[in-house]
Length: 326
Image (cartoon, rainbow, N blue to C red; front, side):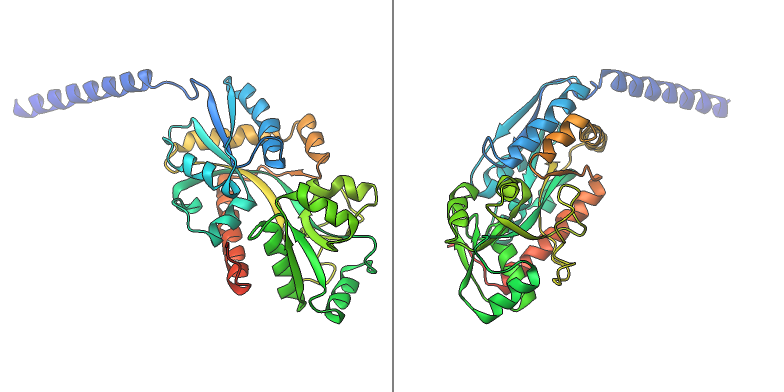
């Protein structure tokens, strides 16, 4: 008799728990139910902002919600990162970032940590850095440039987009890998650097294809090599730095999406899925191509590994070159 009573009680409890679980599941709203914010770690009008807006539109369409692109410029994206790190991990706040934010983090103390405080969603796109020189410089290849720099130590200068920027560290990496001594000339962004690059006051630079594509097309600047593992589809005639005799030299101004740590995994997977579909659209790829930018849409796992690799590489370069923000 007791045994039968126990079975009845157990069965009743099982039905009760099943009903409660069904009720909770029924009450849980499907994501998303309201607009989603993409905080962008740069100002409006730049390359990162363009990538965010071009991709956010089809993603929002697929999710059936408005995508709010929230530009938070300043401190190489650190302001946006701090804001996003403090946001609730509920699937309604993400951050669009670039390689510049990783570089900033290895030379500055920040209240957040990209690998500790964020979950990777997807790398969206990438624009490989291009070694460009003023046409007046008497070199036509990386090999000739290295020989010229070694013959004239400390006389060859390169432009960057600011102290401790990705362009700055790219120049330091080149000097370290080639045994050359270069003079770093920092500017406040590409717009400030271009006039001196075009006039020849600064003789070389490492900048993304999107920053100098127009000048390369018109012959005002000359591309010696691209810092990509393979030749770019958009400029197949330009050799890679590796082909040109500088092993392992890969520098890319990439763009990606992360979420506050603890964001539900189904939300991250869905967002990655929609980004991957968005960048496959012809209108998205063709718009990126205008700025020499290629679509990527890597998985959360691959993007996490990429973030770690980037941080390790630039931390080593900054330490070896004693790069500090003054």
